Amino acid sequence: MPDPVVKPVGVALIGCGRISGAHLAAAAAVPDAVRIVATVDPDPAAAQAAAGPFGAAALTSMADALAMPEVEAVLIASPNALHGEQALAALAAGRHALVEKPLAETGAQARLLEAEAAKRGLVLAAGHTYRHNRAIVTLLDRMPDWGPLRAVSVTSCVFWDGPQAPWWATRSPEDGLILSLFAPHSLDFVQLVMGADDPLRVHAEAARWQPGWRGEDEAMILMAYPGRRMASVHISYNQRSVFDRKVLHFAGGVAEIEDGEVLKWNGEVLVSPSEGVLINPRRMGGRRTGHFFEQQLREFAAAVRGAPHRCPTGHDAARLIELIDQVKASARANSADAIRG
Ligand SMILES: NC(=O)c1ccc[n+]([C@@H]2O[C@H](COP(=O)([O-])OP(=O)(O)OC[C@H]3O[C@@H](n4cnc5c(N)ncnc54)[C@H](O)[C@@H]3O)[C@@H](O)[C@H]2O)c1
Image 1 (cartoon, rainbow, N blue to C red):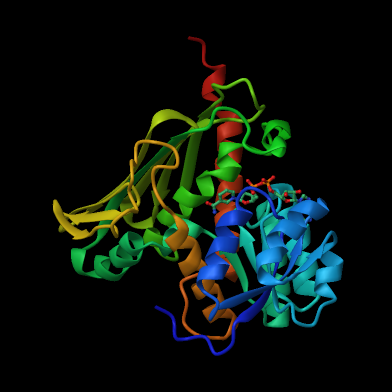
Image 2: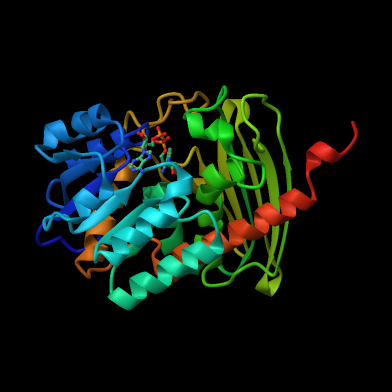
């Protein structure tokens, strides 16, 4: 846990759509860490509904939020294509930023943000919500005892019956669908366990099964890391029976994380979820995730106040987007769709 935060960080929520509910519920649960002081959405009713419970200013322009002195930080939860420009505007206005994944659409854009944050001494954090769960935190704390890591394999398969927001449908195959929206979670996990090393080689295959969007909805990624370590990631939007599993092969044995919540070491359960968290993990929505969002806000507030934290910031946040650039380039060259049969 980060050190206690002295004063709640004044936050403007940018984008009051689908995921904003999770952030707002988390903010309400951690009033010692953050205070929502403004909400912004082009739809005034959405901004108002989000602001109401907090007595915050409901706005339709981010510039108006950046003009408010009580806004110390922004939480960007707008469509992916806006993240880069909105984060840059916030940093240029001297505000810290927590940006929903992906931090930016391209590695070049992410590097610009990293440089701007460093120049101004501001926190630029990416919203890799899932890294804040107890199973992952415990794994990271314990893995130095388990000997060298040799291989990691991540499977994260869910089911979406078509676009969950209108902009999903219009993303081009070049922009990427699942590789932009869902891969960041799994690749952030790989980056966490591989430490400071980036992969030496990246190979990806991608395919589209559903007609409701243009981008890929299924992908497999294979990566070779220094020290003969390897990682594989399988992500899907087509799996009706939700499947979420991480397996790590160390010299000393095998660690597993099941359903994002259960950590096992050589079959022995080290971490299990609180009661009521895993309701039916094979179903969409069958797992409560509010605790990750709460912890993420606590960690971000700690980062803003200069305390130890576990948010991916600056360089680490940006290099993940460079990795996604490589994955997208490989997937474009290796579309499994193009193979006959
Ligand atoms: N961490 C997670 O687990 C998680 C889960 C879902 C979505 N996300 C991310 O959250 C982001 C939002 O996804 P969503 O599903 O809520 O999408 P959404 O379309 O439901 O919500 C986006 C909102 O942003 C608003 N918006 C559009 N232009 C804007 C602008 N210029 N300024 C401010 N707001 C603007 C839209 O009106 C909409 O209300 C995406 O980047 C997505 O990748 C993260």
